[in-house]
Structure formats: C-alpha cells, structure tokens
Length: 185
Length: 185
DNA sequence: GTCTATATCAAGATAGAC
DNA sequence: GTCTATCTTGATATAGAC
Image 1 (tube, helix red, strand yellow):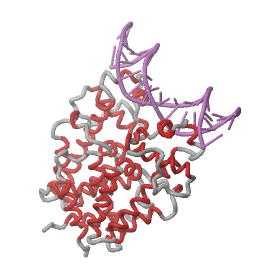
Image 2: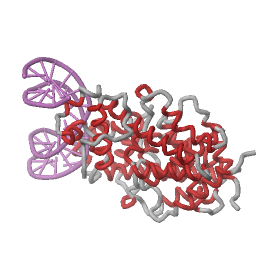
Image 3: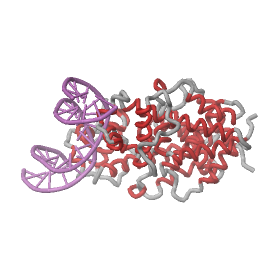
Image 4: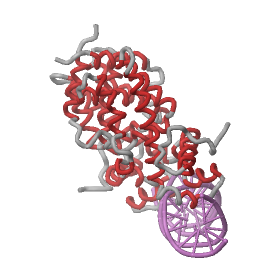
C-alpha cells in the first residue's frame, strides 16, 4: 500500500497543495482505522507534524470533514454518471452505488450520517451526484428519492451488520429494484 | 417535567426494579439531550447518584444500551403488530414505523446505527419485531427486507436532514410504498 | 446500593514564538 | 508552515470502604 504522500486525484483543487495532502491522509486514516481514529492528533502523527499545525490549513475539524465529503461526492458523481450512461441504468446505478459504499465505507458513513455541510461544499455538487438517479427514474424526483432511500437503506443496514447474519440480501436488492423499475400509473 | 423516578412500562422485567429505573432515566436522557449526552456521569447525575454506582446494576455501558434497545424493540414490535392487524397493513405499518422513529429518534438511531447486541437481547425479540413486516409482504422475506430498507432509508435520511431541505418526502414515501405493494411475477 | 478516590486515556482548540 | 506549551473538557471503569 502506498500512503500519506500521494495526492488523491479527486481532492478539490480550490485547496492548497498542502491542504490536499492533508485531506488525502485524512481519507486514508479514516478508511483504515475508522471514524473514531480520525482525530487531529492522529492525523498529524500520520503526516509527521503536530496537531496545532493542521489549523493553519483548516479552520476546524468540520472544515476538514467537509473537504473529505466533497471528495466523496465528486467521486460518486463520476461513478454514477458513468453507470447511468450504459444499458439498464437503474441496475447499473444500484451496483455502482453499493460498490462505492463498500469501497469506502467510512467515507460513505461520513457522507450520510448527518446533514451535509452545505455551507462549505462547492455549489452544485450535491445536485450533480443526485442527477443520474433522477435521470434513471425517468425524471421523477419522488421516484428518485424513493430509490435512493431504498439503496441507502440496503447499504447502510448491511454496513452496520444490522440485517440478520444469514439474510439473502441479493434477493432483497432484486425485489426492490424490480419494484422501482416498474412505471407508475 | 417529571424525571428519573418514573418507571417506563416497557422496560423488560428481567431487570431489578432499580435497574429498570436506570434504564428509564437513560431513555429520557438520551431522547432529551442526544446520544452525546448519554454518559455514565450524566446519567448518574440525573438519578442523584455517582457514576460508579451504576456499575452495580450494569456491567458496562454496552449492557445498559442493550437494555435500552430491548425496550425499543418491544415497543416497536407492539406497535407494528397493531398496525399490521388493520386495513391496508403495508401503509399502516409504514406509518407506524415512521411514527415510532420520530417519537423516539435517538432510540431509533441507537437501534439501527450498528449491529444489535444479540448476545444481550431476549431470545426471539428481533424476530418478533420483524414478523409483521414479513406478514405484510405476503410472507416473502426478500420483499420484507427490501421494504424495511426503503422505510429505514426514508426515515434515517430524514432524521439526519440528509435530503435537500425542500424535498417532497410524502411523495417519495408514496412512490416507494406503491412499488412494494405490487405483486412480483 | 452507594460512596470517595483514582487510574487511564483522549479529545478540539488557542497563543505566541520561530 | 511548523513548533511548544497549555487550556478546557470529558470519557469508561476499578478498588475498596461503608
């Protein structure tokens, strides 16, 4: 595994180079050791500096987390756009959604466990990530939100190991996607 | 406001009377001040005792939380059974689900944010709470899990204020319930 | 069943020097 | 951009007396 020094290509470039390195290290720390390990001290350790130095780059922890969430939204928007451009957009999108969440489970949690820090996010980013889901729902916003809720519910309940251990989740996904694929009338 | 002393009627009675009072106070504290406020110290304050005394009643915080979760499962099982016994079980159940979550949002989070403490829960309780959903899905477990995922997704995304502020959630619920109401073939 | 005293650990953030 | 020193706060849990 490479580490620390590498700059993640999807870190927003409004940030200074050093800030981007910090976000990159924070994402690695988060994913490797979980949300509980994402502290200013541990992050600084990983970068070989002291915790107070981080405050020269981010005003507080919330600003750092917002930058991390922005990375997640950019990446998911890109993945969703690609999936929705192929055959069977609805199932492709569902697959891309689940794959993203399981590739970066801790980031996914950070992105969904509370309100988005909308005041700190690039304008239009939230909408951009939602757009492919709306398109795959035939432009019906209500259907898109229902579909998102279903996908998020399946995903987060599985991530949280909240389903019974022996549950057949493949069938549950299939049943839900079939339901949302049907035209309303 | 009354406090501390009152015993919640749905606290499991395998516990000693004093332990039930503690669980009751913990549920109040959790709901009034949020998960961050549920600490052994704050709980003890509310009961007029010192934190170490709590450990005579619960071996650790996890055991206390398990008792709280058991209360939530008992209550939701009761509410779901009642809702599913009436006309339009699927919509009644969905309403009961959402109502429960919004009546006790912090308890709902505690119940869904991670794996159940299955080793500390009364046997059969998890299944009892799930049963009405399976029944309303015509006995189809996969459909029941999809429906649960949808309901949880709608609920938790709303509780987390994760939908756009202006989203029409009533329509999203309706679209999803219509989808799951249709027979699969 | 409750107490005091204590161990152990850790968090976010600021001031001010270099 | 980084440092040291520090503030302020707070957590879970145990030992052993009463």
